[in-house]
Length: 106
Image 1 (tube, rainbow, N blue to C red):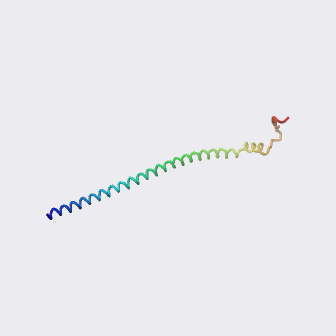
Image 2 (cartoon, helix red, strand yellow):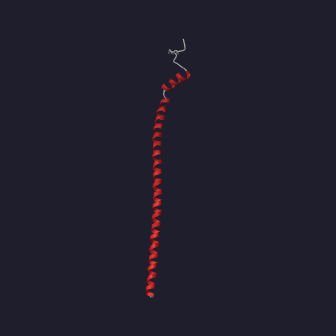
Image 3 (tube, rainbow, N blue to C red):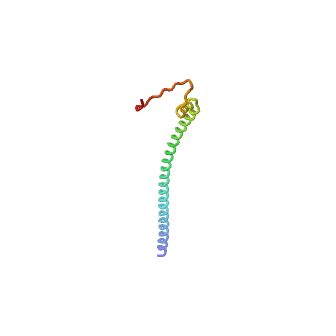
């Protein structure tokens, strides 16, 4: 009878140990799956941000190119003449200026 009880105790210990090991493994798998899902969500969010930033970079590069062209144009004599005519109303001494009359003027 004693041998039977010893076997039952050993069998219970093995079963309890195996059960705890199984429970620990299941818990570990659950934690890994949860962490994996969070990492995937973070990755997707960061990819969206990356695409937005790349789009902004492209827009800024285009804007920079336009500003470079404008900067080069502003340094020309033609630009200075246009601004003198439009803003200051200046003309060359030998130049004749013709102005259109508006509809309400005689």
